[in-house]
Image 1: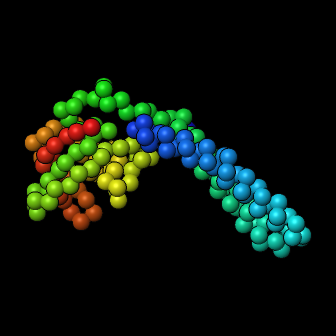
Image 2: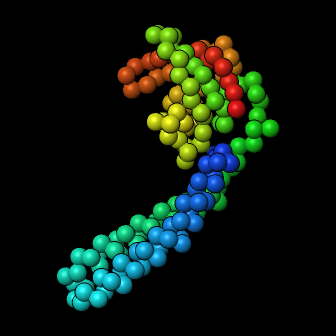
Image 3: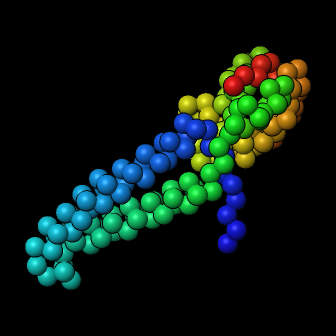
Length: 158
């Protein structure tokens, strides 16, 4: 399986590395303790606490593996190398919905950092991918689940 580069801001990669550290040093120990306690309850064939703890252990290990793979394939966005005149991963872009005049601001981030509720949209999302490469004043029509929306790029910052 070929793994693709995953774009991160420095802050985003630090967050991933911090979660890996927490899972390895804290969560693993907590789950191991739960397993140890559950083993004390006796017969494993009817021990739901043991089953739950083993399932949790598998989930923790799966999350660690996923995060480590992401960190291995991380490509840090270097703002110094970006064209400041166009939208890139790492840009903060202010756009206006031309149908209702509403102005929105988004940070364009890699898919692993995307959090629409915080205004962070993925460079692979329908809106994010169409904004990449645009300049201030450019207009774009984007297909969304409800139809089409037309935006104008008002401002690009980093």
